[in-house]
Image (cartoon, rainbow, N blue to C red; front, side, top):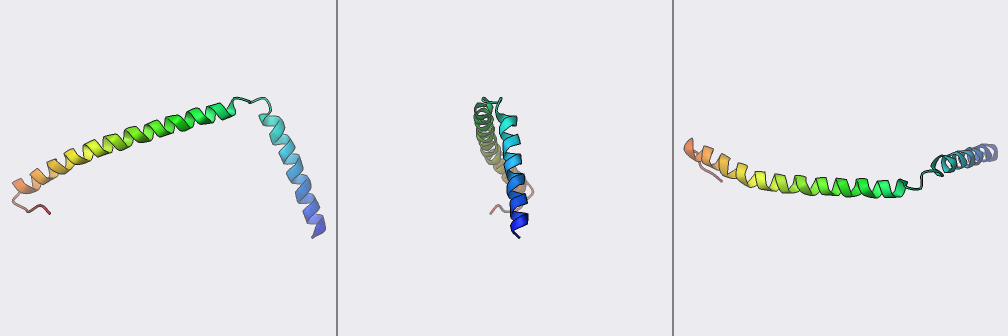
Length: 74
């Protein structure tokens, strides 16, 4: 059990070192992530506004169709 733990610890250390060296030159990665986050947030707001606006118009359209077919609207 101890031997497996030592191997796992060594593997984690080597992997951590390699990841650190890989991202060492990329100091602007945090800024890029923030920019992508802002874009995703903006896109989400646009989708919510569009769905809300279209939802009310579609509701009116379908109620008119149901009424013209002689049905009752809930």
